[in-house]
Length: 368
Image 1 (tube, one colour):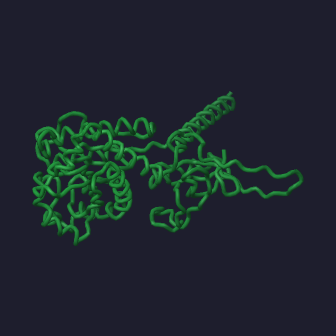
Image 2 (cartoon, helix red, strand yellow):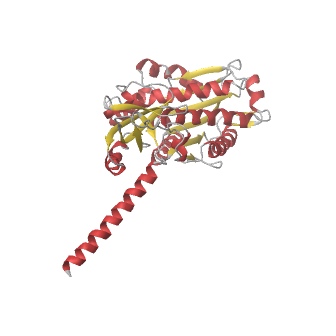
Image 3 (cartoon, one colour):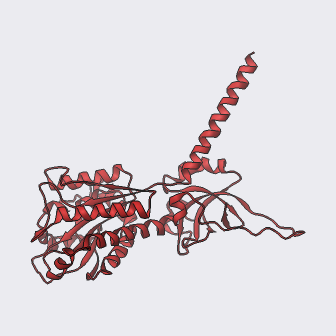
């Protein structure tokens, strides 16, 4: 009787373990990515107000349109707005921005996009620009020069207020070193997209240490869609269709960002779009087949050096496996006989690459 009970328990445990592994594998084929869209200002701080445009209201409408378009273009992307009405997180603007960063971090965001409009006393200045975080000494010192341009002082941190020996500064510096290349990649794409609608491309800007970027853990940018104080930019921004066009420019940049870094449609939908069908051996041929399972960390449209720093602790241990489509270069770690074996290391890989998942390969190519 005792042996029978033990056998039943072993059977139940084995079935349960199999179901857990299957569930984990199913989830791994549909990695979720997160973007936080932050409509600037709100509540007691309307931002820049010029004629018929109130910045806080304008950017909220654009942000909602960005979310709407992303829900259509990338349905498996989690899109969050920091606010959905004319509200603020805190009466203090500096604290408000910190809380927006906290919201972003709590969502586990892969990208933060703050959306704003610009204004300046010099009405000749015009164009779109995107700001990224940098803690470069020379650029930080420029804050003293550009800081007076901004009416809302709580938007940015003066370098004099940053304790270079503090843990906060060291953490921000570490994040900046890791995130800045990704932020710049998105910023360039976004600027080019906005310029397609006639705005002057002022390019990527750095120097002002924005509070929300300083405290955010993921790559992030501040998008400035144009200068309300410039007659040309104002005429465009107030025109019919401008909000939707700006939303299209931003959402397309977000789609490009995620697909370039993490792969094509297959990664978003869980479908096997990036599949290379292998050719069966001719009858009578003797063929050595190298196949198994591996953990895909990223995919790319261009070849990447396996010693590149973006592979973090896996640098030098990554192998390139070919797929198909626009993002045919798959960078993977490990070689396993079964998917269950690969699953054992997947949790560790996701500490550095949250969207990693298990794939099957055969003779250097991803297969079904």
